[in-house]
Image (cartoon, rainbow, N blue to C red; front, side, top):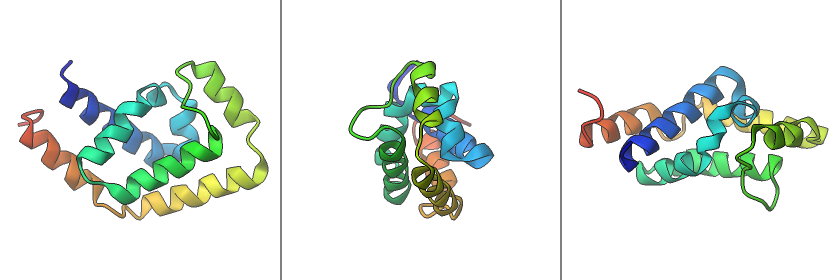
Length: 118
């Protein structure tokens, strides 16, 4: 898979998971195994506010460390999330749902530019 395909795939996974169940679901499911690509993809498409929300969510769940690749480690971190952080995560979900960067349009333009969709 080409690098541009990985970025596109990871951002689409992020977007789908967050809209389906919030950042909690994104980090709980296997989709966040592609976290680094999602972060890079948001940078590449210029989705700065969405990137800030992702980084804030990541810091709430995994303060001071990277997102673990192992699903079990991510799930354990989510299970032990203090209540105030869990509430803050829900606030970040609400901000994400406002689509501050027009992410769907940005990722679609990226896909067309790189011939990932026709």
